[in-house]
Length: 117
Image (cartoon, rainbow, N blue to C red; front, side):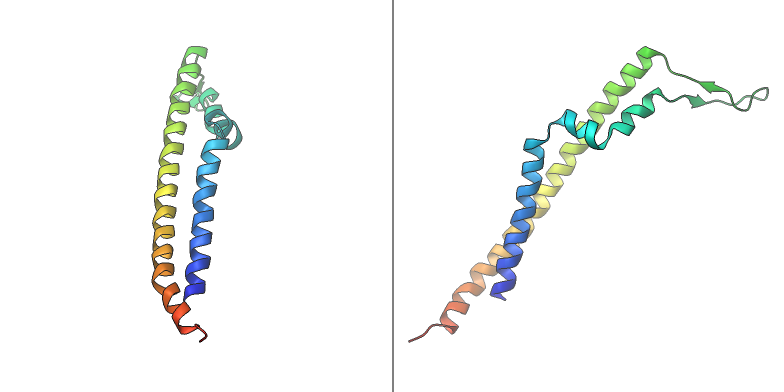
């Protein structure tokens, strides 16, 4: 049980450090460009508005609408990243704490059972 607690503590602490390191090292702009740029690209796409005369009629946004859409999308993506970061940190902190408590309970028992006189 002590070995499980040690491994669990190390693994969960590693995931916690990874989440924090990723947030610190990768800037918001790098995150958007690297992982979510396709969402900004969608702002330039046309919107299908078929009519009876033309079933393939597309309405394309103006440059002003595209800029506004991209700004709103960037704000949304950054907020989503922050929320994901907080849930990752919270979840991994809880797992780290649980495994650490398990370690603190079982390690003294392990030491007394394996104590050589």
